[in-house]
Image (tube, rainbow over all chains, first blue to last red; front, side, top):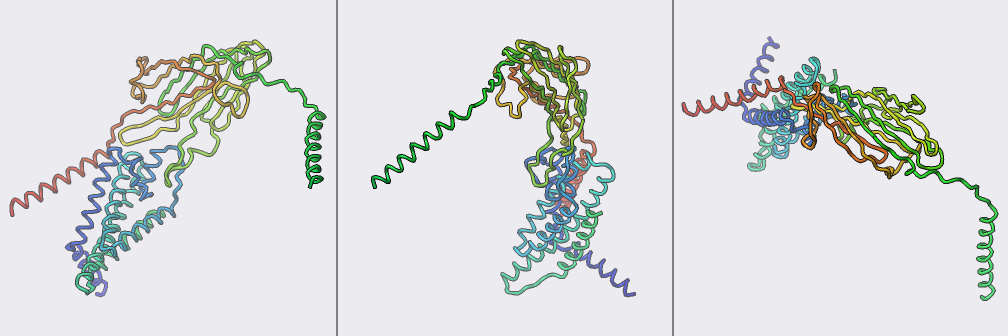
Length: 192
Length: 263
């Protein structure tokens, strides 16, 4: 009975997030960046002048090996985890600067994921391609949820500045917890 | 004070005299000066490179060498391959490979001495020989190499390897090119699907499924040729996703527009 109640709570929480303004804004920013990044990557604009794919090295590794064949990449699993975790921290905690850092980080990370995908689709083997695509989905979910909490935190701080009362929406915590869950999954994906 | 100045003068005189005496005393052995590098004269140099596909190329070099000095002149023939990509981004890969590899082969043949002994070291092959005073020889190099620097973009595939060869004295540092400049005739062949980056500067013939470019350049003891080829490719998988993204975007725009019209 208790378990049923908690699953209902999660469902209700997700439903609540679906109607949350900051969730929609977070999705729009990330997917906008993704769309631009994919187009740039597909049209061969990314390899040298725009190093966005270096921000998500787990996805960028296929592009490195296609662009520099026979070379030995200087990144390892620890670097993958370090970068993913640092980006998650920037996206969620960047909300304290009234969400400006979160907006920028979400857009650039969307750009990075999008820019890396064409190389993965073209040159990675089936296993690496499927691993990368699963990671891309998990990473995207993590960033969107953490971005939601960051943006909501930013709006609360702005509200505090205007009204001298700190008010934070309950859905901010839900988004943060969901973001953490997806972040853990994407880090596990990078490790194995 | 006067005596002090006298002492200094005396010391200076003795030290000068001592060094002069030393210079006279130690006899320097007379070493004949090495022959000038300009003593090597090259004639009729030709280079023929054929890129068979994205991973394999063959080359032939032929050169006549004359020793115009009055003493035997040892020299080396060096063939060097491209060494791989250098890192220039924090995440960029390091050197192509730190381990020696034998993905190339060279045969050096002298008209006078027959097959020469070739030593291979990572990306370089060396063959040594010598020419007696006033002697002349014809050297021929036959080689092949595996192409490693094939860069893949989404719409293009580049072959960026290079090969260079030099003839000169067996010194570590060869220095500037030998002054005996002569014409080098280059014949470069590559598959028709490829384009050489500077192809428009040359007259291209098509022969047996290969593009053929002939040109001549000045040779001063060493020469290198970069392949710099590219061919277009159709990115099928990413094109499907690209089309899907655009179809989705157009569908969303149309749906929102329809909703606005209804309202």
